Length: 231
Image 1 (tube, one colour):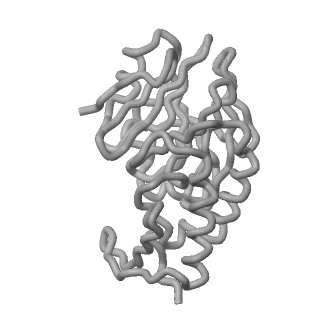
Image 2 (cartoon, one colour; image 1 turned 135 degrees about the vertical axis):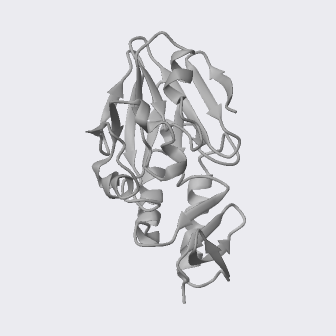
């Protein structure tokens, strides 16, 4: 069951309960940011909310963000995410590359792509410049941030947080895919400082197993990092 509610006129959040995704409508087009985990009719749901043509953008290709990807013949994604996507499934549709610095114009609504590698190689955020909101995917959140295994890299994650902080004057709220929503931009540096402490061995982790893989959970208060064990 997907709970649908307005953020404002032309902006909706679609919430599965543990995963949320977003629909943004401009004057000419609408963009679905991710498509859920269990949901298989996100495009149909989006089209029930707007008469505009609906496009899909993937913030990254973890399975809890691409539940309805097969509904779309084409979808926006950073090409660095292809390994993550095509090693888990054949989505059927065509990848339309977007990269850091690209701008999508929905018609009087500009969306800037911000590259945030680290959580996954091709993770991106979407800056809604007109309405001063950042749709962050997974890297900025108060829940559990997966950072273990060969697809994920804490050094890159910290560099991405530094980079994102440079945009802090352009948005007032962050809309993540999980947990507390919305968030304040100050969480970016909180996560940066916490990640640094994890990397320096200043936070004690506990051994956990996630989907059959050993990892270490580092509770830093603002979030929990699931990492390869440090030290």
